[in-house]
Length: 248
Image (cartoon, rainbow, N blue to C red; front, side, top):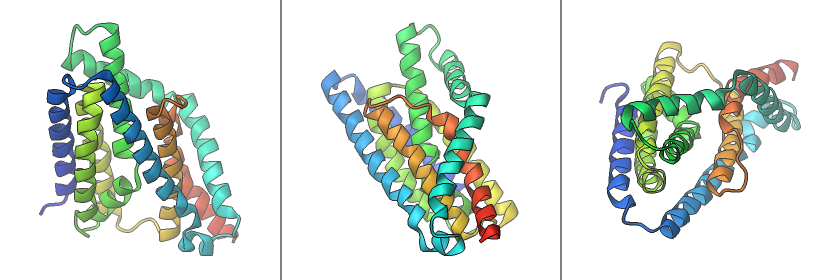
């Protein structure tokens, strides 16, 4: 298998899953689609909680002071949220979704446009900020195989099917996000080697888990959090972890 095979497979499963969802989506009642979306929200919450527990990872706890992991995650989200809000990342992601909608489904009514954008944004976030995305892409770039991404591809394929049944073709457009983000991480892994110690990866994973909780809240219709504005936290987390390691 070539480097990038995992990402290519992931893109294919997202397209195939969402295509199947589009075929059967119109046959499902609103109640069924709502229930499916809620189920995905609950599963996303479970995955997010599991990732967030990396805050207690022994490698992270041993590398910094005992109370530091929580402060690292808190600082990452606060500073990342400030940066993302100033840069208006959520708005830019929605604008990109709107641009794709205009190219893929021109002439749709405002309601159809909003549904497209919501499907694109939520799917992109779910598919691209989980721990498997980061670790799997980097590991493939390091030459450790695509096993993690192949597992993720299977999960994303089923999720894309359910999402597309509820949100429509915007979910299929999220394959662009998967290709760009995972592909970039794979290239980064190939160029830089094992550039993040285990402690830094744990801090990043825990921060990503909390961001995913925000996605779950949106799927469960509990609170519409501007999740994309928090994405810079994924870059800040390893930096704060390094500072804590030096201080420790």
